[in-house]
Image (cartoon, rainbow, N blue to C red; front, side, top):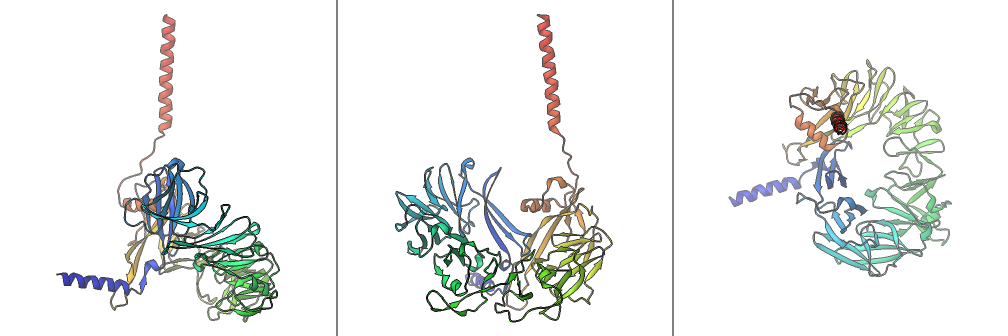
Length: 543
């Protein structure tokens, strides 16, 4: 029997290790501390790649904290820091799996004059200490090299950047040895310092004063990239650059400073005459910032280039005034009309012949489901997929005025369209809106072995109009009225609401009409006061 159990465990573990595809590889998670009328909660939310369908949401009560004096005092990538009238606390984001209540640690007692930075560094007896805790286990790491008058620049869990009035410091915390390494970042003027927060996935941010700029990482390491900017002849103050919100590191003022894609070029520092590798480009180009999604293209000398082409080696072929083009999403541009990449040529942008007055809807990218972006004019809804061919039938004639994007569907011609099929529905189309959706994960991972089941997920969709709340029945593809749900009681994008609606979707009954109890109480109170006044008057008259 023991051998059988062992073999089963080996098979299960082996299958999980050999999983070639898992749904959770593509989902996103977000942590938070939520305060509401029910108390204080740690919240973990996981969502589908489309960004709005819930996979799960966990709310664990944070017990023992005084709600009236609760205050969030800091956060890094791994921990929440907060306080109340009784002390200072830390709660780790990723270690909340075991108990029904959230696990947190009290690290210090209450002190209204306690000086701290991000709830991590505490000034105790004139010395700074880095404090980390789990459960009842609290560790203090002394940072004797730091002066008392420091302020925060950026705090990660193991790397911190702080400044005094004279110097800028980096701190690396080694959790294994429980020791700290403090270094001075040279040449920076603390009074001029700015922090540029970039894409967290790249683990590279920047700090700069007027004449110097450094790359920093979440482990406290730093690199002086000032010589590279000098080699590029960047003639602006480095602390006055406009950072573009994009996965690729990019600043844009009069010119674009951008992190090069995958390779460096040779340059020379004019100050020292030293030959150096330059990992940035600097040109009088303009990034085409889209209304939706990330920037993928730049305009240079009135031509369009992919953002990764730092040498401007091949421009896109397009027959229009490029200076008038506006990026919308992905490969879609707007000018005199709408322009898109030709299906068979990645370097040719063609007119779609769709009016610039058409209304745009962005694409929705769910797990193994895709709702293409669309343009809507008076007569048609045009679907703009990853490949666009002007000669193909990629539009549908409109027979109704109402066209909406509702979650993973388009609503037009009195039907829901999922990108492939239309499902006629009955509702008040003018007021119909999406309440949201959640995902039922049936099989989370697929293995490499033959005949193993694929990843399987199921979406549950909810809607409402002025008259009713609806569930999209998976089998019939019809809107099913949730008979006991009042549309006035439900707002969009609430996980608990969606779960409640799923539980009651098949309950028979009707909406309970609310009575205005406030008016009844006023009437009763007024009547009682009148009786009391009349009695008092009669007694006095009799006397």
